[in-house]
Length: 256
Ligand code: ZN
Image 1: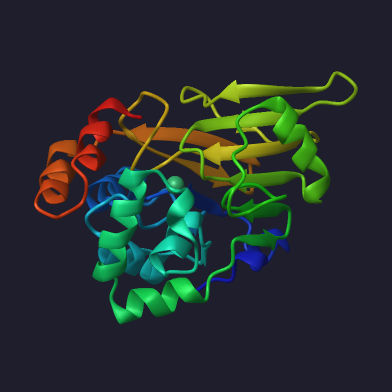
Image 2 (image 1 turned 180 degrees about the horizontal axis):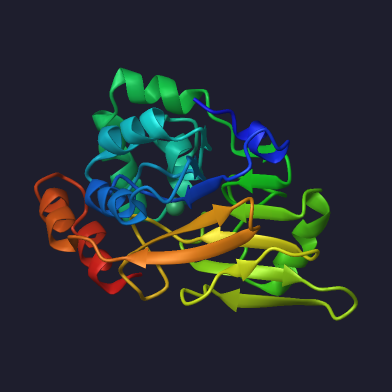
């Protein structure tokens, strides 16, 4: 496997990285992303929450174990491992955690157990929630984004956790901006600093139910956000065949 660090140090010049997050045990959505991205990537970076809410935790983690050169741990992964107090979770999330805990294989547990919630790879910082609080913090407004700026040193930081595909640009004295994902043209990663969220593969919450991800090109220094439709009904059928809360199925059609 190619070490991601090699990209940045120039040993490999053309490097496209499929960045994804929050698969949430939705295997049909993950398969659609991999098929849509086809051969457009050389590496996969996964920003965590591979499990929780969905019906196929072992399949999704197994695919990341097989394909991802970097994979982070998220709050739902920790909850599945029994590392978190889930009394603060809402009742639906808590029932989903309990179902997931009973479902995890020994191999899945071992793999998730050795993951970090934050990693630095050359010019890129990766965190599940935020660089300041990699497990819990949501970055959905410019105030929170600005406060996080001093918690990473690289030009670009990738985050997940909110399930919303967006990016923050830190301009010079003109401040900063929050921007919805642009699917028509790539974002140029120039001299400014960026916090980028690829959105969620398996449970988008930006009212667009299609699976969300993006491609980072480290040669062109571009970020291209992408969406792909997947067989939502199939994932819903799988959820309803388990003891997972039925709301885990219905919300997928709504993208929330
Ligand atoms: Zn999540």
